Length: 378
Image (cartoon, rainbow, N blue to C red; front, side, top):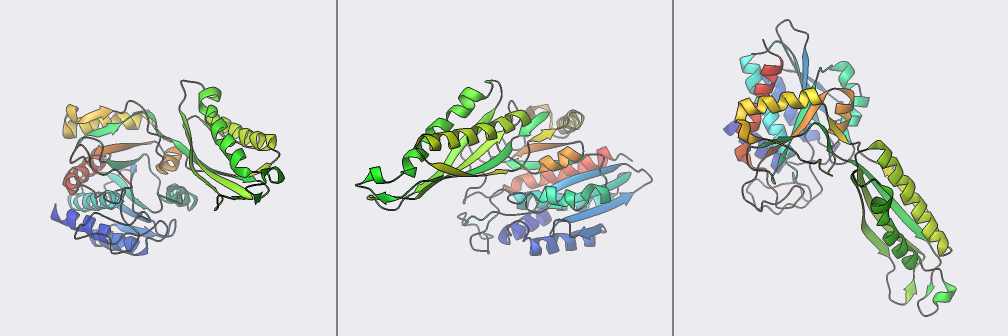
């Protein structure tokens, strides 16, 4: 599929950050209009929805591809490497978009379906929750979908393998910044200061008990302190210390308990040293939860499409996160992974040397065609 490869590499060379995908959006809209789709723009600013109707059925289907890139300096050395300094497609959204555009062309040419197809090209998956913004802008009121589907490439999964599971497949993600408010002074006179580094270290150690002692052993959760910043000289006690946390969970009750315990531990530990904390706790994406009927549908279709040996059930959900969660909260559907591994040590997603495996493009494109034509059977 030379056209799809060319599209993918064009997108790879011209990456744009979430909610700033202006040229990407223009390119997608132009391609779809030339294929005969009704093209609607402006949802979440740079989102594109392409609609194709055929036959008399009122059944509707939505397929989503994310279109944004990441603030990473590319190190692939490819001749189609990013032309935008400090921005690259390190998560394969260029491939997701190219496959859906390739499928769009085939579907439009064959018109082998009966119903209404909505192709959703969504911005800002990586940062601002473009799916949520599109929904707030009336996505499903304007473009009703009986079901919605999305895939993500995975360089850690054998090539061409479909991996999916019913129920939670990706975690909810929250972030927290804790600032310890101390009192600075001379490093040789600590009795005259209130050292936020010591209090901060105590908070970090105490946070390690949140999952192990406050969450049921059979429920999954992660609390990671990813950054700790304080001071600039060996003989100066700083005024403040700051730590940054990522928090992952699946169960809403667990999510609430994690926030409650993190706040209590930070405040209590700081108070024990005579200090206070400022806590900035932000709820991020919700857990991505697949629907059983749609997940079974994708699994059965994939078995017919690729063979039973190419379909695997995910044994446990990933602690990664994805804003397709919001679409699955509004409509039944399924999010699944498609393996793209070249070797046993391919660069992972979000790595500066990651490059989407073009060999998977014909498979992903053909599967979307198969799904659209099967779901909206003529």
